Image (tube, rainbow, N blue to C red; front, side):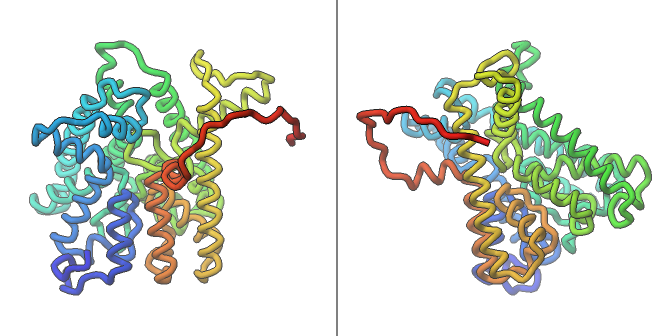
Length: 416
């Protein structure tokens, strides 16, 4: 990123900006301090595309694929790491799943690239259309949020273009469902069954998209700077796109900074929830949010157990969901407080940017290029923590646990 060959004008980025851009690409976030389409040369853009692909698939997945190509044996330790990286309950079939991850990624990205190329062939030369199609297909499927349209405009020129909207939304959704769910969907015709995980992911993803589209449509319907100037069909398309994209994609077809504050705050909630486990997206994940909702419903109904699709959830899953959510909230609140002190900007703007970085979304209200050096470093670390996961980071930093030799007596406190 800092090499002269990476920039169109021959002047590479400074170290902090280069680090920020590289982190944003590897963490598949999409926040940028310079415009990707106009600042970077072809070489610089290809470096970003390569980092997006590695970041989307995951480091361990890429390492395993290279080992398989070189016909090296995957050790037990590596299988255990892969099991954790893919959120699997056992090591059975883990290497087979990695192969599927690679195949699904390539097939979906190439299909998306071909469809986008066919659409953009009407706007650009054949070579440019093919390059635009490939870059955006990889970026959208990996929920990266980088685009080449120029001027930080994202896809605002295609707000009412059905082809671009539908193709982009399908790529974002498929990338956000998770490779485990994609594998089950691909084999559904043969197995005729879905796991509890797949049912929860598909149900919650569908609900969030539908509710998000309704909220954006209602709040922005009369806003002349967003949906107000579009025709009825364009309003519906834009509402759905802005509901799908905050789940970790980070591209938009309307100006995010022009949204009403209520809509912006709702997008913060969607970014916080994020995509699904084992996907290319970030956030606390749809399954975590579903467990929290299930806990609230169970408490209101006076039930002891959380039951989803006739399955009772074990207690440690509930504790993990609460831990992930509270740690994520702590990171976002802490970073927002720090940047509110160092950056001279509106609070909602800062909160939006921090949540976008932590959820590896890439949405921005225009704050990123205006950040101080300290602010850029903080957001860089936030993107890294968001991609790594707060629980993973906590496990890595905690001391080796000691076996408990006794249990304390049970006590009671008043809640609520």
